Image (spheres, one colour):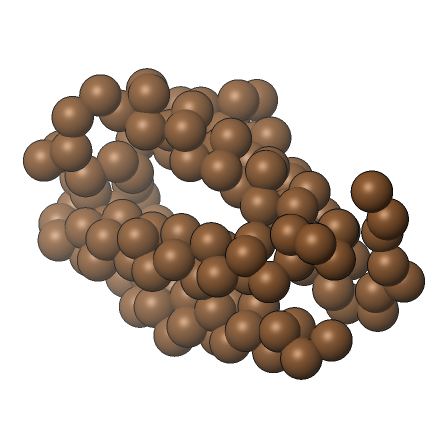
Length: 122
């Protein structure tokens, strides 16, 4: 399987998701604290989302998988919006993060989606 010479910012993006996915296993308590209470099996969901981030981050490196990985990344970020909105629902859900930071995360999430979408052209 052949990899391509991608720009540094693309490699930064893919590395960011691999690192984020690894953090689900290195620091799972962080992610467990922000899981919406209405979702079942928190430990499993934290592990699955970490695995998804790692796989997507790696698949971005390979031209044959790149576009599919980008669409998967955008879908994953859209699903993660549920966590961001949940964290705005109350003091316990916020995990001690100031509301202004939680509010900034919403447009940031859309910015991350656009960042990924822009690479469909390369």
